[in-house]
Length: 387
Image (tube, rainbow, N blue to C red; front, top):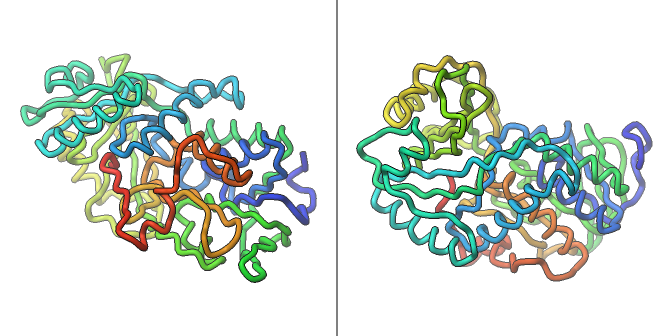
């Protein structure tokens, strides 16, 4: 295991670009398999979207591929204390979607059936049952809900550090504060990754650069249609009399969500007026819209004092689904990006997939429908269950 202050390696079998949860998972799974891997991160581990995520882990998706990836990831989260060996504060409090539109009820009914076919115990619940599962929820407009008791939330920073620590133990070289400037090619083959600290000869690159993936792909002429979109989060002061067991709760129509955080709650909501961009500045202009929904859907939270908050980036794609695969135009350029808000919860399984793509062996699920080429055809793969 090389020290961070040692000279940059001159070569590696695989270079992973991006030190968030996807990149660290890829580095761990590759190193565990005996692959010589270098991970490059221009700041510190998890400094992009991962450290600013809400930490939800769920299996409730409308796309069968996402269901399989999420289920395998949830299994890995449950086993995380053993492999790779780290405390991630996983809380199986369940995931509750609150539904107030007939169209959403119909879509979630189909999604629950899909999930049940694959052995998951999600279920549709009545409006009364939804209020019982989360006593903070109110509203006569609630039509139904969808609930999965095995879902919940974990600590994103713990997952990144756990994977990175284990990757190093297996021989991976993880370089922080090391910015990638270019990827050199000869013909259609990758030859080196150029950084501000020197060059690393390699024939295989994995792009796990999150919201910054578009520029990474451009280095080798691959168009990765990923657009950054700011999302903001608040967390409150302690709330007296709050239920000890509170599911991760999402008002699907508005995208307002919350889960317990200490004695208070963490909450957020998409801002319909937000414009794409890389800003992670926290602002107050979105709070009035959030509070309008809070007063209607969970009024007890409206009186809680705000203790702090932060902003992070979603990496959005045109169909709000991930882009995973290997580029056609250049040899051995792999990518896993564009998760549109569900990258953290899918990271364990995606790390496995990237390992198997590198080793050119079958993946546990066919991920060809998630290839970037789908955007050049009519084969879009929309994910309905993204908030």
